Length: 125
Image (cartoon, rainbow, N blue to C red; front, side, top):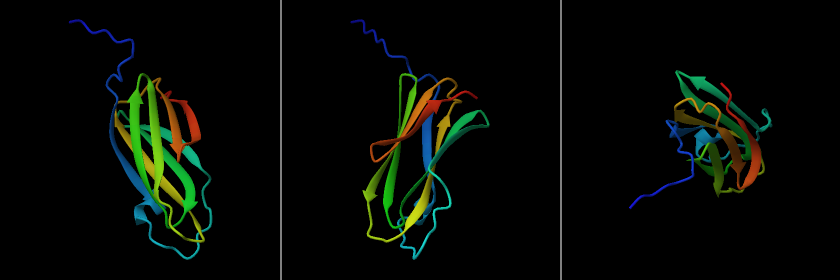
C-alpha cells in the first residue's frame, strides 16, 4: 500500500521545551501588588543554531498557565492556556521561552493566550 501526503513535513525543527519565567516561575503564588512593567510581547532568536521564541503577557498574578507547541506544515503554533485563574486583585507579567531544535528558518508562527491571538509572524534569521 502506498501512502502520499501533501503536507510539508516539519523538517528538522522539533519542539524541545517551554521554560516559564516572570510570574509563571512562581507557580501562582499570591503577590500583594504588581505594576505592569512589560507590554505583551513576542520575539525570537537563534541560539547555537536553535530557535527560541520568547512570549510575555500580562495576567492575574495568582493565575496558573500551561504552555504547549505544535508544528504542522511550516507553522509553529504556541498555545498558552489558563489552568487556574486565581482570585487576586493584581496583574503580573508572565513569560515563557519556547525552545526548539533547529533554526525554524522561514517558518510562520502564531501565539495564542486562552484562544486569543497575541501575535503572529515569520521566522527570518
